[in-house]
Image (cartoon, rainbow, N blue to C red; front, side):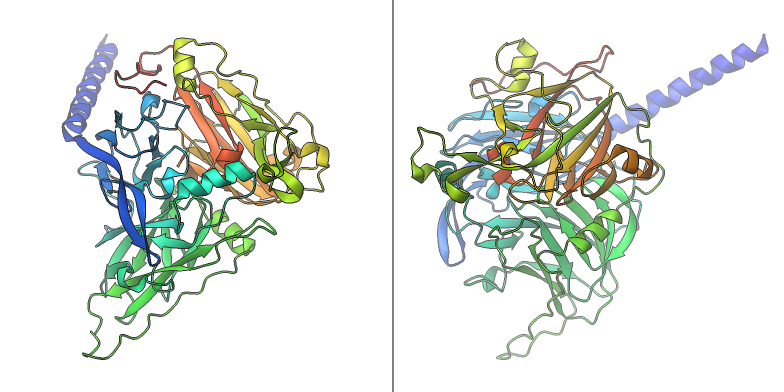
Length: 575
Ligand code: C2O
């Protein structure tokens, strides 16, 4: 009779301990309230002043800093003349899909003069994320860092850095980006390339009229600092490097990594990378620089280089009248250096053995790529200025994604409104073909549609993302909302389950929210569908979203207490 008693006592102690612990962490968790006013603001770059859409008049927008467990309440007031929504890129939004932000997916847009309050709690995430507009091309200027520190009392899995600096890589048009996008939609051609890249909003010394504003990143001899690098660029994967300094990679997309040292990192749009940098060089000024990784062939791209200056506090000041010595430039890989990209992405590992689903309930195979539509009969030649009188398009599994415009997908799903989408998105390409070979022209024209994939709560999902060589192979940064996933493998050519499955890393694969799928190659991701809602998965090159390189994973509610999406907020914008 003794044993059961011991068991029940220890159970009781355990329960008390759990209660105390959760009460403590709740007491630690804070609620942060912010107001984001989206408005036109004059911003001068590259010698010209543009009426730029910003948040609170800041470009880049305000940095949000929270602790894991905190709740963010952000009231977005739209004082601009465009529709807007804000997406919290990489935040899992567990049961709060209404706060995710993509226009017509989880909400209708916030119309000019209206507002919407996003409310969500950060659950079990630490590291660097960001926020951006998720409506037309507004995110070209409407973006900022979202930094998640460990819970109070908890530490990083590396020595505490002396300073932490967000490094937001951006893309700047010497024009209104909304007009650039509109023009492309009208002509069917590729949109104009950007005129500059930026670091924390500044192009830097190598551009006209830009030296004065060049971003300065402080460091001092002997300290180790954390750079939180974010590719907020619209359409361009970027290399990033710092002259004479090694980078120790410790995290990506708000998941920690097994630290490794490198001279250069590559980030697709949407991706973040946390690196430690040591002040171990002679006190001076060094350039940090970013420029294009361009995998698409025969496509024009912005080949300029943005710089900021890593400046030692103790660097000797130049004497009066003497111009400062030019900082040293880092070595950057060639624009098309795919080998460097592959070596980098293959170095990413979780810090320890992780729990990757080993059994799979839903095995999906999605092709991703471009296409060219023949000019529709009722279109004029001016509307078909793509290659050989066509219009650019893009698709997954031959479906070119079309957003609804009268109600969001999540609202339609929640209210049972019929006719907004169908749940028949193909689980594999409708026609099997040599994806990375010479593809027959008959496969270049995808079919438009609003088709989604329905997933049972808790199902274990694998998705093979397969690039195609249609029009051109290209490295596509594929981003999934609502989830982090493990990247268990990547490779070149066509994915072959017989050959490649045995090589999956099910031990310590990196966890991400955006995977850069190799040009003319594939990547395999795995995750458990434990967050109900309508989650868009799309290429984070904005030019491709507009063309239809997106789809929706619709995850059902579960049966348990905390397995259903919350009810929509009262002020959720309707159409
Ligand atoms: Cu960072 Cu759907 O986006």
